[in-house]
Figure 1: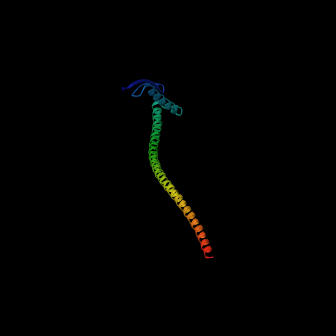
Figure 2: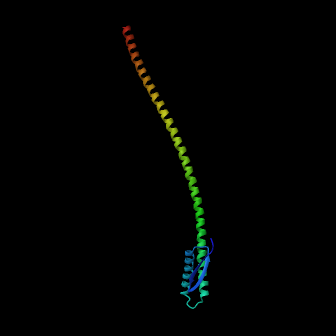
Length: 153
């Protein structure tokens, strides 16, 4: 993109400014410079336009340096936040992995528990069968004792 030439007015003086920015941006920059010089001019009524321009340039340089510091601080904060996000994502992945392992372990435990419950149920059935058989044997024993006593009399 070629240089764009724009006629601007700064502190009452006409200039032709050329740059790679679009006309609207160049006009906005010139207006900003004009405002800064006028702002300084309110405090120094007898100063030369060159002195006012220099003081305005110093103020704008101060703004630039402040914005650079802010940008650097934000870049450091962004870097730290990026590290924090990675750390928490790693923790999240680890938690998901642990949850899956826990869930698998819980499923295995549930399966084992069902098997043990079934085994217990079968053992209870056998116990019940043995109790019935034992009861039947006791009854038979009583009957046999009765017969023996009757036959002995």
